[in-house]
Image (tube, rainbow, N blue to C red; front, side):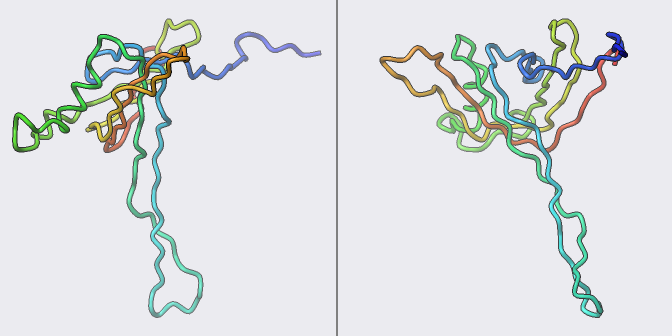
Length: 164
């Protein structure tokens, strides 16, 4: 009976070994991130002189899904500070310039031993569209208090990793 060697084994990476960076700052206690996805919408077309009843289909606009990050509430105010850049207009009557509230967000997937980064994705021109300061509170609960941000972005890229 043939036996597979360790060299041939390819275990998938685990979804619980990851790090999130907003710019160069590591997000503390980040426990969950929603999926990265992209959709290319279809544009139907039928020429007026077409002899067929089958419509042609062409690629249309590209849309990137919102990304949600959840973190345990700590003394780190990174989510709140970023979210309030657009939400808190009390001190200034106009919106901030793009380069002050849009950020590059880096997602690093780690190997099972948390030694090496095996995949890196970067969200481009991301900004916070929704901020939840804390999750529900319950007197009889024992859950961690969670804060979250929902970000929109203008695309993501997979970056090369050293040694990959």
